[in-house]
Image (cartoon, rainbow, N blue to C red; front, side, top):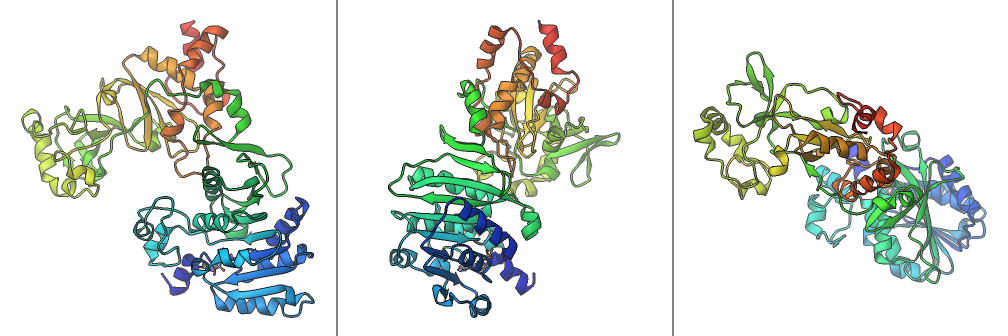
Length: 508
Ligand SMILES: C[S@@+](CC[C@H](N)C(=O)[O-])C[C@H]1O[C@@H](n2cnc3c(N)ncnc32)[C@H](O)[C@@H]1O
């Protein structure tokens, strides 16, 4: 990587286009923002600094800070001929070394902190050898070493925004910052937990691809702080900078709810899933433990054809098979245990060829990174227990951006295994599985779940969300109303041998 590229990433150096900064400032003025003092803490070449100075003409002082001195020189040139030049103060400063609290305390009136912090995670900093991040922070319970080593992954902008909230404590102020949408949500959740004086807040989506060439969901996050005002942790998400109506988002029962109106209509389903959602098997060695069956035998991920007993082999559906509703591709996985921690040496007697295969690949299996393998018998896997061997299951892939459950029955008489990107419930009987499957596709269940899922996240479907749905309550509703309302959208994305409507008809 070139030095320039590394530096660009390390400092999150993606300058906001002037037009966008102007559009945002005009909107903020329209919302009634009227600051006495403006702070742009990482002002770059000055888009927000100049746009804010032009828009909020009554502000007495406009401060621009920046670590890159050549950028400050550019801003200096930009503002040098202005009639209001004395209002604008420029200063070279490293955000992480500055005593912001002391600076801000010395500033008069209502403060607006505006700008666009670097969009880079500490893990990326670690991978490129970047040091532009908080040095000795105990951020969200992570120690400085975890932060620097990348063990605790967080966005630098998240840390910076929470720092801004800390230095504005007790002040009447506004914060308007361009951020990744996932960061904005985390900051607002944290602000709620910490009881920060956020009186009103909202997110307005921007087209990050168009403005920054970044394939990520991003927004303008606005937080209005008033130490004496009533706190409100609910906020509104608008789809564009100019949208008039948005979705109400809030925190309920320890969860962030993406659509409060829908959530409240189906909140009777909130509780605990009657059965815990599990993830598929984890073995961290797909080239050794997974096979494709061919006419010549089982072929592992390294292309070796091997002869194995069938006893420890189970049909495998991967996350991509579940997510895109593909047919089974003759894939198998070696399941060495029926329960976590079970002794594995008995494989030697029960399936000698399988044991020889495992022993031949012991070097790779023994080298599996996670410490959980060290504490368990050789060739251990995870994600096994009685539940993993029941014949019927309902599965969903955590990585896919759709509420797409699949009903999966046994293949060749064997229960089907999944990889660890899949979450599932399992059942002894087909009837119980299909009944639950129909419940999960009811309008109420899909409404409830979609109000909690954030599709811009890397793994939008989470067990914490699935486990919060008490689908047994739909039995009562089913009984009361005599039928389930099946969600048509869910049906369209559903794939299985038979359609749920047909099964419902059979049951009645
Ligand atoms: C995403 S750019 C945005 C620049 C400007 N705020 C804008 O909206 O156009 C981030 C800026 O933060 C600056 N920056 C990065 N780390 C910094 C630090 N530790 N202290 C001060 N500025 C920093 C970069 O040099 C870069 O100009």
